[in-house]
Length: 200
Image 1 (cartoon, rainbow, N blue to C red):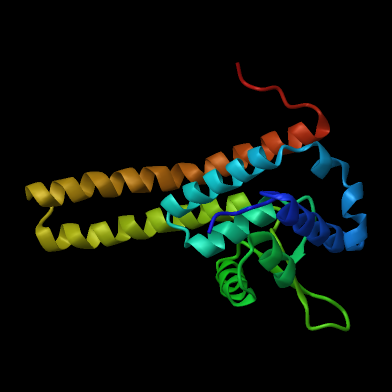
Image 2: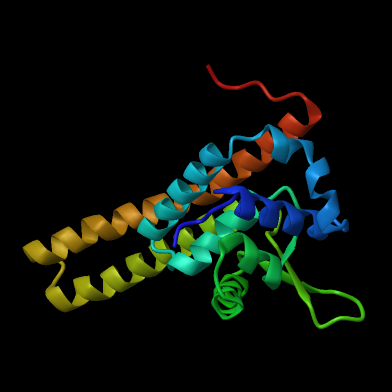
């Protein structure tokens, strides 16, 4: 089932109510959210569905991908499992399994509510750096595995030569990643201070 933020009048009310509660308000406050009122529900739904599909194609399980995009596109700082289930129009059990996966891989943080067993889920501020770091570690692991294959096949064999070239590529990309992250952190700090000048 595709994501349906505001896909129809009922869903729109449910989504707005969930977001209002997440902000500490009540469902009755949902109509006062100016951002929700100015958005085209069909355009929002199209973006969410499209980006969820992109994550699935990149290897994300579908349910965790839907939850991740729901949190990404929410104005609220956090959402509960019940609010996610309402927004996604899916079962609490499905949401529970999805957020468990996201928490385990570090893409979502779970925070308890004082005096309650209810958990609130939110994305860490550096979530995209974490995702890039996961890919970087994967490349490093592939390079190490390829080096083992070179030893098995023979470095001078045609197959060994192909593996060596691939391993060097992965090692190069992985080695460049640290510099890219440092440049991003510098550019991000400059943008926050108003000093950032985009490259021409």
